[in-house]
Image (cartoon, rainbow, N blue to C red):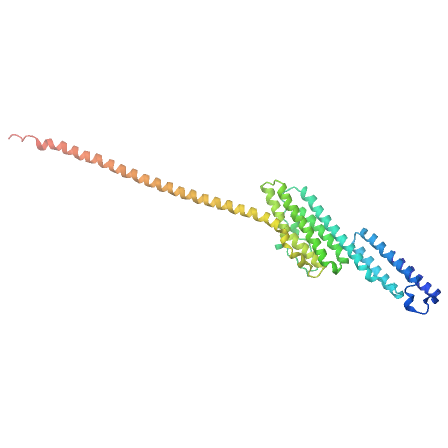
Length: 329
């Protein structure tokens, strides 16, 4: 369509000028308001209206880039006959890019919510861990961290974000840098809200709760930095615009801090209970030792009693011999 518009409009203008050359009225400045100019501007306006209607149906960033390139070439060619409309193209394609990226991010969030609602909390095989989820923006290869395979809902979301970034890269208007960064933060915030809402509405047992908290930790430490790094590949220093919005995930961080506090308090209670038990045991042992000492002392006193009785009995047995009458001579 763009090529036909460029070729035919250019030919019509040249042929009209060649046939009706005397329509200038001797003044080139007044010629711009003539019949040819009015008709040509109407054709350009129709062309731009068609673009506005058709571009939302484009689902690939590469196709948007090709159409933009053809339109710019068409406008530059028509500029030879005074019909350069390149300045009217950016707003149209900016809206198309924004709509496409927003739609892809919304799809990623919706898929995450569907997988999260139907997810079974069972341990997945460990596939490694990337420290803090750090991804170098200057690297040519931005591979999703393999640890995300342990958390299928996050893996689905990150795949959707990667697809949105891949569609953005061929046609990324610089004027949309801040707006698109807000769309990324909006998607991450929607995932954060979904996690908080899931925790509030579901009753998770011990093992399930541990797996859920592991997913929350992977979201903050791996998925979030990776999404920021991917956006940084589309726009210079784009990751900074997303990293500055870390405060939007405080609710998820609170989910991670509450269990840690409860665990520490339970440990303190166990430790204090052990100390009390050890102290009570020591007191009991001390009391038992003291009672044993008393028993020994009592036994010693009772042992001395018979000894005294024996001595007294011995005295009684010898006293008759001493007190008896003297033997007769």
